[in-house]
Amino acid sequence: MKKLIFLFGLLLPALCQAQSYSIDWYKVAGGGGTSVGTTGGTVYSVSGTIGQQDASTAMTGGNYSLTGGFWSLISLVQTAGAPLLTITHSGNSAIISWPSPSTGFFLQTNSILAQSNNWVNYTGSIVTNGPGTTNSVTITPPVGNLFFRLGP
Image (cartoon, rainbow, N blue to C red; front, top):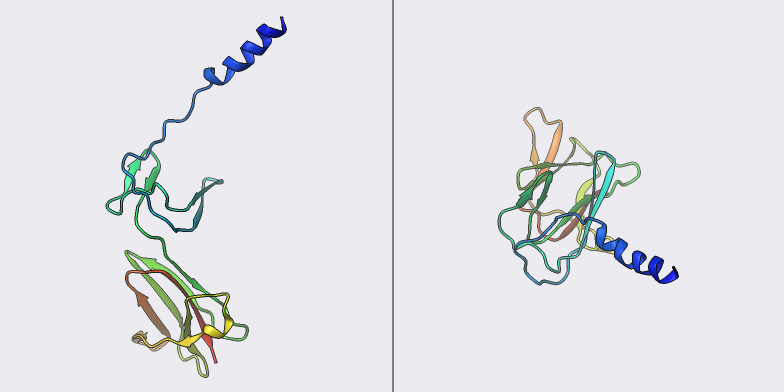
């Protein structure tokens, strides 16, 4: 009887049905990071790039889509007492904006957040909207890690 229960226990996993997900085209590459998202209360996470889908068009199926290539991170760091920075996404661009005028504060960047002495003044184009109430910077395409803050 014990042998019969043991054999049934071995066969039980074979009776379970697995989900049918596949990556049809891949490239072995190193690096990457972790991307986490939430859909309908369910949390999804993708880590690393080994076996990533080739950097071309998105693979889609059902409610899922996977776009290959390299992930980048553009993030804002709020400085106490400074005007509020915002970040939005438009197509293949990240747009950083803040109120104008912001007297005494300058847009600064840093590619390594852990190094607090790495902040430098942004040297690219800053656009002020028509009524002069908002400054903005557009990063196209976002590449690598880049952090923004308003600093003195």
